[in-house]
Length: 128
Image (cartoon, rainbow, N blue to C red):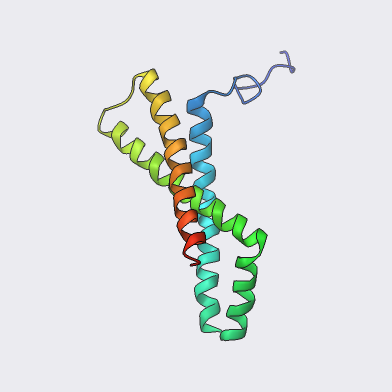
């Protein structure tokens, strides 16, 4: 028996494809949303601990790292939502043609980026 061969195909054997990359990214954004939910609950919990704790938490969220985390969370939320809508169309039996899969995948990424930038534009310009 040759011990050099892998037991099953893995990421080193296959070239990344649009479908596999978007599927993996969907899973990653799902995990990121779980961590973002912990931050959101922490923010709400800091309200109950008093003004000084809330101010420290807000100080973190207003730092460059906090803003980056919140921007990433917003993108993850938008991407996960848009890709979920795409999966609903697949569940209904639409969009299985490979050209449609690639176009809808590109549309999910573009719409997610557009929604994220639009949301953050309004946050920054309205000083929310």
